[in-house]
Amino acid sequence: MKNVWPNRSLVNGLAFVALCVASVSVSRADTPIVSALLGNWVGPGLDKVRAPSGAEAYLRRSVRFTPDLETLRIEAFADEKGTIRLFTYESDGPYKVIGPSSDIVGAYEIDLTNDRSLMTIHIADPGLWKGLNLGACPLAVGKAVEISACASGPPFNTSSCIDRDLVQIDAAGALRFGDQASNRCEKRPTTLDRAHYIKAQN
Image 1 (tube, rainbow, N blue to C red):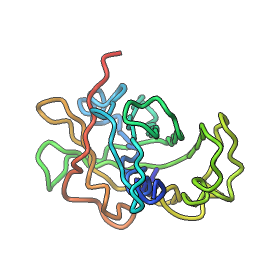
Image 2: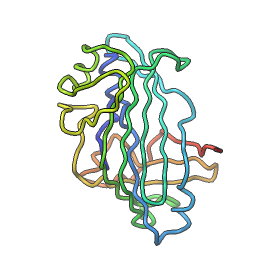
Image 3: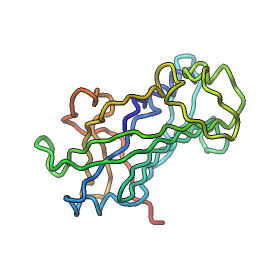
Image 4: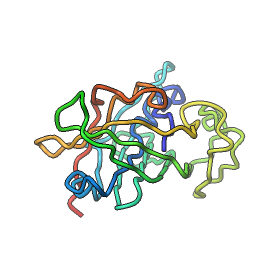
């Protein structure tokens, strides 16, 4: 699954973070890493993104792994306390762990497939959605809309390619994917992304 987003101005600012974390696939053969991935993973806080215009937004990232599915969720807010919701983006699909990475000790190569990309807007702002290349989508406040066929560009344009990525759970228990700025449709990254997730206790 790979939406090339994170690429999340309020408009351009969102465009650079929005899909920074992709869906992940895991194979039953690699039981230790698959077992370790299962559950909910959350970003350590809200990420602030700034548009060239100076407008700001705040993003909360989370990833969930089940035995068969990985789900990426991005929530965007207009305030740093996370009380004024702008939108919620969610995508999911199967994942497959290929095996240990030859580039990074402790990391695994994974292939991701995106089956679904849903956008739920929480405010009526046609200019904002047009600026995010979602102007052709039938968005309605509070309604989850599949945007794979109507997004006209980044940050939410989707691809049918297999997302060739990396995943690592480090000694401190933090989950990282491969460098999300790289084109993972063409080549698997050889470095890890700076963004990380922490396993939720519930």
